[in-house]
Image (tube, helix red, strand yellow):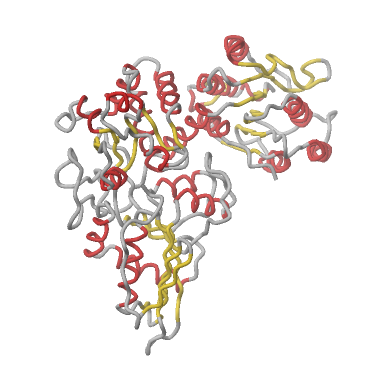
Length: 577
């Protein structure tokens, strides 16, 4: 429950501080005292559940004479949802997080950010924000990610005596039609993302067709997803009546803090917290000093970090249902039944912010979720010029064409029958003087999945073909735009390993002029271009997507195009301008 403050907070001495309350802001303004050579104002945005503890610690610290190098420090603490700050920070660095989109008008970029999880920092870096290198990053609190279940449901599974695994949960999801599972949108919620990582890993490790098992798990979760945590919590049963238990939410990935806070409201049906093996990444509350702040503020931020890692802060965290950064609760912390004895400390954490999952695993989880839970209409266009015959050493010397086709086949297996997909190939003079060939028109996968698979598997490079990029992009864009469908992501995804080489086709200027003329913000077409190898001109490709929207992904290693394709298809267009 992170939608608002819990607890009364601290009351500061009137002789030391002026307390300013405006909206969600809680400002602590130190009055000038003898000996101060100046004043620095430090802004801190913290996840709502930890903001009261940070606020109280900052108030006490300022009351006791907050200084850094003789400079008095003013600290302003605000409760900000991590997804909103993430959108604002990402936007400041010129990137957009999949599933997050643009920042709202109320989002701020503070000097110091305390989100609920390091995965937010990792996602911003992974999205192409190369200059995003926040300082410090040490953890100031921790909350394990658990599976929350109504106690009567958990009792049926042997809780709290029996230790369960994520694989057990996957089996329950696929065999027990009475177990209603849910999740907070994992692209916008760190606990939901941690649960998604654990669940898909368990589904993929079960043998058989791992991709099919993962996709089935994603779609099962998607039927019970909620955009907001409050909405998810409201779906838990409010009565022990068997009918209410059967109709209510039966399992959801949440934080331990969520469960404790929910049960503190004394609901008719308390929640059990199940600590499943293997443990997913916890919420680790990193203390991120954002890049670009002035040195005086950076110094003040480091002094404040000391106050937030002092022993007394652990006891403040206990009142907020949070553990210390080493996984041990402070005085008054009441762990849920079934919690591991002696605290919850992932191996190697050392009390610092967790590094989070492997970046590629994180990208795959976010992309897979976005693809499996959205409905799209896509034209896939694949380069078949002669250079696509080159072998890829990292793929067992399979050709670039073979690696590309394998990526497209894998992506097609992720999307369900609600999608509409078409397939073209291009080079030069494929049909008379035309540079492209339609293999399968855009149509519902429910009718043409096997036809697409057969067409993909039959693709071969054209021995002497060049790259007719510009004519193909314009024709493909018009095709997607002509039958544009509302309520879907209408996209063109193009693979190429070269630059435009068609001297008889339109020029770059003509292409960009025509795309600018026909682009319709009310009917956006997402253009995603995946460049393969060292002969691709990123500038040439980005000039196109700057007009159309979308993105360019370039890799020197063609063996990576599988993961890149999933990230690319998961992109959603910006709102119409």
